Image (cartoon, rainbow, N blue to C red; front, side):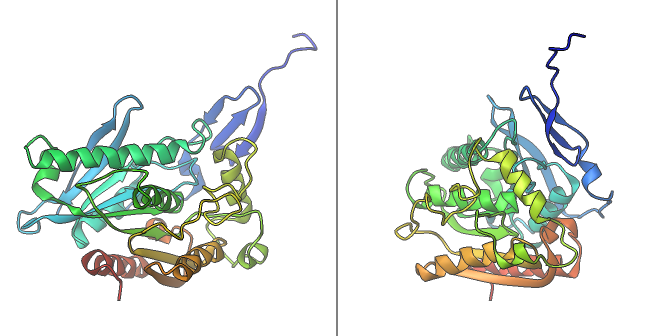
Length: 332
């Protein structure tokens, strides 16, 4: 081997699960290494299948609905769900996200669509946002075809497209915000589908300025400040800071939301989360603009508790809150 050999070497390493090499290659390991193995009980009364929504990128969505005809009497609201993982990790098929969607389909009840999107650093932002927009465009076509018999039969039979809610956990909540803004600002046409509300669970936001919770983190967090920073570094465009509009919706270069006719929002804030002040600040800014925002705090819960402990009492209460919001447009 010559002394001038420049073999590729690791330049960024996220716990051995995502490694970026000096030549730009991304090497992925087993994400199970990031959390202890868990098994989840089955959720009866729900059927599911995968559908292809973007052939060129090979992207799918997992479609859930109650299996009993009694539960499906009449059309059901539609819950679009984006998984978490800091835009670099996760999958719609992972058991924790799958379990949450099973419970949501059964207990809201609703037609749930859990959406696959491209991950960074192979596909840096805004790739995931473009995928979410493509998914809603696909769903719009399904709503158009439902009247003529050309839609997916489950959606044609069960989905009330006029009651569509966009939701997500962590990075998926960030994604839910951005695609909802695209719809509400007229950048993305979705009629006859109607986005009736959006739901942010443990939203993944950031800024260059540290918040109090980042300076003095709560004890026993599931996401550290360092991990959050690294995920943004691997997912944002090269050279961007955490004030990029994707990370910070109210940053110096972010478009104003004042004139955007956003639908009602449900914002869930875990108390033991280094990102809690970002999420509280997001809701506060929207309220200052006169937007309809419901904030629900879970004081002792960690970032991502809805999927990390999907059968906890907090998760049970969250599903009750979500059911009320989907049914009435507010959680009270």
